[in-house]
Image (cartoon, one colour):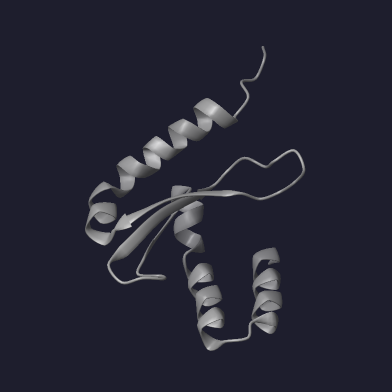
Length: 101
């Protein structure tokens, strides 16, 4: 419900049809993001390109940051799961503080 409210707000501020379509495409990708923990998109800005992206742990000031890896579509498609795994490992290794027992 919160995501839909934010999307409606963003749509109301969007100045172009392209921006509104991008918002709708983002909403359409939400099930994948929720099930896989990352998003993959192709030809979003440029033809024959793709990107894998995932959110980073919350910053201390509450800022929301995203990590993305982009490249040629065929390489991203071929290596999607490996890229996501490497990204997750890097985030876990460098950004998540270990819990103390």
